[in-house]
Length: 240
Image (cartoon, rainbow, N blue to C red):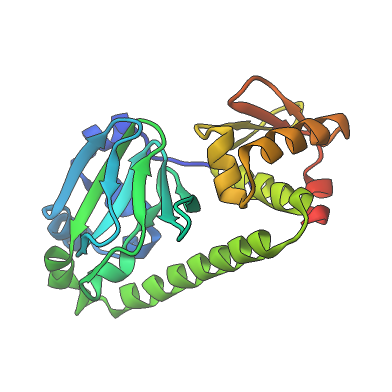
Protein backbone atom coordinates (compact mmCIF):
# COMPACT_ATOMS: atom_id res chain seq x y z
CA UNK A 1 0.00 0.00 0.00
CA UNK A 2 1.39 3.36 -1.01
CA UNK A 3 1.61 5.74 1.91
CA UNK A 4 -0.21 9.07 1.77
CA UNK A 5 0.84 11.73 4.26
CA UNK A 6 -1.31 14.66 5.32
CA UNK A 7 1.31 16.66 7.19
CA UNK A 8 3.71 19.07 5.58
CA UNK A 9 5.98 21.85 6.75
CA UNK A 10 3.53 24.63 5.95
CA UNK A 11 0.80 22.95 7.96
CA UNK A 12 3.16 22.37 10.89
CA UNK A 13 4.04 26.04 10.95
CA UNK A 14 0.42 27.15 10.93
CA UNK A 15 -1.23 24.51 13.11
CA UNK A 16 -0.04 25.82 16.45
CA UNK A 17 1.52 22.39 17.16
CA UNK A 18 -1.85 20.61 17.17
CA UNK A 19 -1.72 19.10 13.68
CA UNK A 20 1.26 16.91 14.56
CA UNK A 21 -0.49 15.77 17.73
CA UNK A 22 -3.72 14.94 15.88
CA UNK A 23 -1.87 13.11 13.09
CA UNK A 24 -0.25 10.67 15.52
CA UNK A 25 -2.45 7.57 16.01
CA UNK A 26 -0.90 7.22 19.45
CA UNK A 27 -2.49 10.51 20.57
CA UNK A 28 -5.50 10.77 18.27
CA UNK A 29 -7.99 9.84 21.01
CA UNK A 30 -7.23 12.93 23.11
CA UNK A 31 -9.95 15.47 23.69
CA UNK A 32 -9.38 18.97 22.35
CA UNK A 33 -8.50 20.24 25.82
CA UNK A 34 -6.05 17.37 26.40
CA UNK A 35 -4.46 17.90 22.98
CA UNK A 36 -4.00 21.59 23.81
CA UNK A 37 -2.44 20.62 27.14
CA UNK A 38 0.06 18.26 25.53
CA UNK A 39 0.78 20.69 22.70
CA UNK A 40 2.18 23.14 25.23
CA UNK A 41 5.02 20.66 25.71
CA UNK A 42 5.64 20.19 21.99
CA UNK A 43 8.75 21.77 20.51
CA UNK A 44 9.55 22.06 16.82
CA UNK A 45 13.08 21.77 15.43
CA UNK A 46 14.39 21.95 11.85
CA UNK A 47 17.36 19.90 10.64
CA UNK A 48 19.30 20.14 7.40
CA UNK A 49 20.04 17.04 5.33
CA UNK A 50 22.78 15.05 7.04
CA UNK A 51 22.35 16.60 10.49
CA UNK A 52 22.14 14.28 13.50
CA UNK A 53 18.79 14.21 15.32
CA UNK A 54 19.98 11.99 18.19
CA UNK A 55 22.78 9.53 18.84
CA UNK A 56 23.23 6.15 20.51
CA UNK A 57 23.70 6.55 24.25
CA UNK A 58 21.86 9.88 24.36
CA UNK A 59 19.18 10.33 27.02
CA UNK A 60 15.78 9.25 25.65
CA UNK A 61 12.89 10.98 27.38
CA UNK A 62 10.76 12.28 24.53
CA UNK A 63 8.69 11.32 21.53
CA UNK A 64 9.98 12.43 18.10
CA UNK A 65 7.34 13.22 15.47
CA UNK A 66 8.31 13.70 11.81
CA UNK A 67 6.33 16.65 10.42
CA UNK A 68 8.07 16.83 7.05
CA UNK A 69 11.05 15.24 5.36
CA UNK A 70 12.60 11.85 6.12
CA UNK A 71 15.12 10.52 8.60
CA UNK A 72 16.93 7.23 8.91
CA UNK A 73 17.34 5.21 12.08
CA UNK A 74 20.51 3.16 12.09
CA UNK A 75 23.12 1.35 14.17
CA UNK A 76 26.82 0.88 13.60
CA UNK A 77 27.83 -2.78 13.41
CA UNK A 78 30.86 -4.26 15.15
CA UNK A 79 32.86 -4.01 11.94
CA UNK A 80 32.08 -0.30 11.67
CA UNK A 81 29.44 -0.54 8.96
CA UNK A 82 26.11 1.26 9.05
CA UNK A 83 22.94 -0.82 9.29
CA UNK A 84 19.71 1.06 8.59
CA UNK A 85 16.77 -0.08 10.74
CA UNK A 86 13.97 2.25 9.65
CA UNK A 87 13.23 5.11 7.31
CA UNK A 88 10.71 7.49 8.92
CA UNK A 89 8.54 9.87 6.88
CA UNK A 90 5.99 12.60 7.55
CA UNK A 91 3.50 11.44 10.19
CA UNK A 92 5.83 8.74 11.58
CA UNK A 93 7.25 8.87 15.08
CA UNK A 94 9.83 7.16 17.24
CA UNK A 95 10.41 7.08 20.98
CA UNK A 96 6.90 6.16 22.10
CA UNK A 97 8.22 4.02 24.93
CA UNK A 98 10.29 6.99 26.10
CA UNK A 99 6.98 8.46 27.26
CA UNK A 100 6.50 5.50 29.59
CA UNK A 101 10.02 5.08 30.93
CA UNK A 102 13.07 7.27 30.46
CA UNK A 103 15.90 5.33 28.86
CA UNK A 104 18.78 5.87 26.44
CA UNK A 105 18.87 5.45 22.69
CA UNK A 106 20.39 2.27 21.30
CA UNK A 107 20.53 3.62 17.75
CA UNK A 108 21.14 6.86 15.83
CA UNK A 109 18.93 9.17 13.78
CA UNK A 110 20.01 11.48 10.97
CA UNK A 111 18.09 13.62 8.48
CA UNK A 112 17.95 12.02 5.02
CA UNK A 113 16.67 15.33 3.67
CA UNK A 114 15.64 18.67 5.16
CA UNK A 115 13.58 17.69 8.16
CA UNK A 116 11.01 19.22 10.51
CA UNK A 117 10.64 17.41 13.84
CA UNK A 118 8.26 17.98 16.72
CA UNK A 119 9.15 16.53 20.13
CA UNK A 120 6.98 15.75 23.12
CA UNK A 121 8.59 15.53 26.56
CA UNK A 122 7.69 12.71 28.95
CA UNK A 123 6.85 15.21 31.69
CA UNK A 124 4.12 16.78 29.54
CA UNK A 125 2.81 13.41 28.44
CA UNK A 126 2.48 12.30 32.08
CA UNK A 127 -0.01 15.12 32.69
CA UNK A 128 -2.73 13.38 30.68
CA UNK A 129 -1.77 9.71 30.37
CA UNK A 130 -3.35 8.66 33.68
CA UNK A 131 -6.77 9.82 32.45
CA UNK A 132 -6.25 8.16 29.03
CA UNK A 133 -5.25 4.51 29.57
CA UNK A 134 -6.13 3.75 25.93
CA UNK A 135 -3.01 5.67 24.91
CA UNK A 136 -0.87 2.98 26.56
CA UNK A 137 -2.67 0.34 24.50
CA UNK A 138 -1.96 2.30 21.34
CA UNK A 139 1.72 2.45 22.27
CA UNK A 140 1.76 -1.35 22.43
CA UNK A 141 -0.06 -1.58 19.09
CA UNK A 142 2.57 0.60 17.44
CA UNK A 143 5.34 -1.33 19.16
CA UNK A 144 3.93 -4.51 17.61
CA UNK A 145 4.04 -2.90 14.17
CA UNK A 146 7.70 -1.97 14.73
CA UNK A 147 8.47 -5.56 15.80
CA UNK A 148 6.96 -6.82 12.55
CA UNK A 149 9.20 -4.42 10.61
CA UNK A 150 12.27 -5.59 12.52
CA UNK A 151 11.34 -9.22 11.79
CA UNK A 152 11.08 -8.28 8.12
CA UNK A 153 14.52 -6.66 8.30
CA UNK A 154 16.02 -9.73 9.99
CA UNK A 155 14.47 -12.00 7.36
CA UNK A 156 15.86 -9.83 4.57
CA UNK A 157 19.36 -9.70 6.06
CA UNK A 158 19.45 -13.43 6.78
CA UNK A 159 18.47 -14.33 3.24
CA UNK A 160 21.37 -15.76 1.27
CA UNK A 161 20.06 -14.33 -1.98
CA UNK A 162 20.95 -10.76 -2.97
CA UNK A 163 17.95 -10.80 -5.32
CA UNK A 164 15.59 -11.52 -2.40
CA UNK A 165 17.23 -8.84 -0.25
CA UNK A 166 16.84 -6.18 -2.93
CA UNK A 167 13.30 -7.24 -3.82
CA UNK A 168 12.35 -7.00 -0.13
CA UNK A 169 13.98 -3.60 0.14
CA UNK A 170 12.10 -2.24 -2.89
CA UNK A 171 8.80 -3.54 -1.50
CA UNK A 172 9.50 -1.80 1.82
CA UNK A 173 10.49 1.45 0.09
CA UNK A 174 7.16 1.56 -1.75
CA UNK A 175 5.46 2.39 1.55
CA UNK A 176 7.94 5.13 2.42
CA UNK A 177 8.70 6.71 -0.95
CA UNK A 178 6.14 5.37 -3.42
CA UNK A 179 3.74 7.42 -5.52
CA UNK A 180 1.27 5.75 -7.86
CA UNK A 181 1.53 6.82 -11.50
CA UNK A 182 0.04 5.60 -14.76
CA UNK A 183 3.29 3.79 -15.54
CA UNK A 184 3.78 2.17 -12.13
CA UNK A 185 4.86 3.12 -8.63
CA UNK A 186 7.53 5.81 -8.63
CA UNK A 187 10.10 5.81 -5.84
CA UNK A 188 11.59 9.28 -5.37
CA UNK A 189 14.46 8.43 -3.06
CA UNK A 190 16.59 10.55 -0.77
CA UNK A 191 18.90 7.57 -0.26
CA UNK A 192 22.16 6.85 -2.03
CA UNK A 193 22.98 3.44 -3.48
CA UNK A 194 25.30 2.93 -0.51
CA UNK A 195 22.47 3.63 1.93
CA UNK A 196 20.17 1.29 0.02
CA UNK A 197 22.86 -1.37 0.30
CA UNK A 198 23.11 -0.71 4.03
CA UNK A 199 19.36 -1.17 4.39
CA UNK A 200 19.44 -4.43 2.42
CA UNK A 201 22.65 -5.78 3.97
CA UNK A 202 24.69 -5.85 0.75
CA UNK A 203 27.46 -3.78 -0.80
CA UNK A 204 26.88 -0.70 -2.94
CA UNK A 205 28.40 -2.48 -5.93
CA UNK A 206 26.03 -5.43 -5.59
CA UNK A 207 23.08 -3.07 -5.19
CA UNK A 208 23.93 -1.20 -8.40
CA UNK A 209 24.54 -4.40 -10.35
CA UNK A 210 21.33 -6.07 -9.21
CA UNK A 211 19.22 -2.99 -9.90
CA UNK A 212 20.49 -3.08 -13.46
CA UNK A 213 19.53 -6.76 -13.64
CA UNK A 214 16.03 -6.03 -12.29
CA UNK A 215 15.66 -3.40 -14.99
CA UNK A 216 16.68 -5.89 -17.68
CA UNK A 217 14.09 -8.32 -16.31
CA UNK A 218 11.38 -5.68 -16.62
CA UNK A 219 10.70 -5.44 -12.89
CA UNK A 220 11.82 -1.82 -12.51
CA UNK A 221 12.99 1.12 -14.54
CA UNK A 222 15.86 3.28 -13.32
CA UNK A 223 15.20 6.97 -13.89
CA UNK A 224 18.35 8.71 -12.80
CA UNK A 225 20.16 8.15 -9.52
CA UNK A 226 17.30 8.96 -7.15
CA UNK A 227 14.22 7.63 -8.96
CA UNK A 228 13.10 4.04 -9.51
CA UNK A 229 9.86 3.10 -11.27
CA UNK A 230 8.37 -0.15 -9.94
CA UNK A 231 6.84 -1.96 -12.92
CA UNK A 232 5.93 -5.32 -11.34
CA UNK A 233 5.36 -5.08 -7.59
CA UNK A 234 3.71 -8.51 -7.37
CA UNK A 235 6.74 -10.19 -8.92
CA UNK A 236 9.04 -8.41 -6.47
CA UNK A 237 6.88 -9.58 -3.57
CA UNK A 238 7.07 -13.16 -4.82
CA UNK A 239 10.88 -13.01 -4.71
CA UNK A 240 11.02 -12.11 -1.01
